[in-house]
Image (cartoon, rainbow, N blue to C red; front, side, top):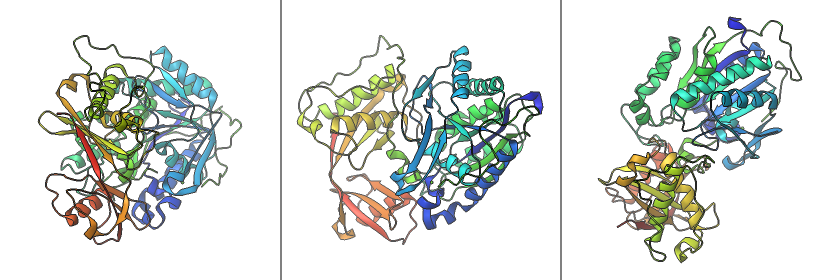
Length: 497
């Protein structure tokens, strides 16, 4: 075994919930290649003798200046949010390994924060579901990446490697992440004609076992692709560093305009002299399985870091300004985003809420440049919080940091941004003839309720109900002429003057 490392496998796995049979149902035929490849990947993990698997996900709660780890002693997830509550995954935390990862990272001035949360995010749950469904059984460390530099993500991977070597047990590493989200006109994050180049470069880099090309990939191309797996791959490359690589692309497909890659970066036999602990990697576990691409832009927001970046002395944070009236709504969006970008903190709702902000409603927060170009937009169709103020704060942070079409908003951009908030009424079932694109937004949903697409009202160039439905369906990945349910809603738009 090369260098006697305890890292016996490193690979990449996609995480669309539609892969899970209980979630995708008949639609799993569209991702059969990825499902079969996950079975192949699991067999390789089992043959490597891995007793613990470390998974890093782009959808774990986000700490801008720290890596996160789900705390134990047990880790679990189900797919209730995807109408499959009986499907899920459960494993014990490898607390010893996590402690060593935390210590090794601290030696490199990298912070690891434990989060107490009952359910794993779907970026972790989908790969773990398939690993267990295909026969792997062992302990898990579940991690999330940060907004730190690319180099720091490589270094964090190296820390994971050193931690595994210290405990002396065989460990596998899985980088969860999807590639470009913008490959076709009906892709959920929109279309970019150059996006395919990102996926092709990643695939060719792995096939040629030249993963340094992924590290050095054009960052503008990465931004155009709207990917969610790049930082996960950087950590995996750091984990595999120092071993003789054994790279292979097991599968690649993009049935919904999103690239799904299953790949191996490293595989080594069970280390000589290392014996199994309490878990048997070859035993079978009968476990039964997220976030469909169309739903990604409605994810809940990241949590903030406890560490604050120093606020620039020459940057004015806009106050909440008008204590009453329409101006307080976009002012709250501005204050939320400027506070988060400059300090890393998520604000609490102000005490003196206006009547608009006390109400409970879904909303979309839009960020635009002074020239009118979109810089981020994320929202919730139906309210998840107790007040519009809380809903707005959560969605504002997500719009600034989690829109897959854009990189996170930078502090130097803040003076050139403007904000608007669309507050949604309760959606109501309707017919095509009930729609009016000037006055109503639309939600389209397929027969099984697995894919949903939304379009706000009063958008430039959307002048007929048929066009409104057609565009919403494409955004959701619903094929033309497919039966869809229609819901309409009104949206009250609050914009900065």
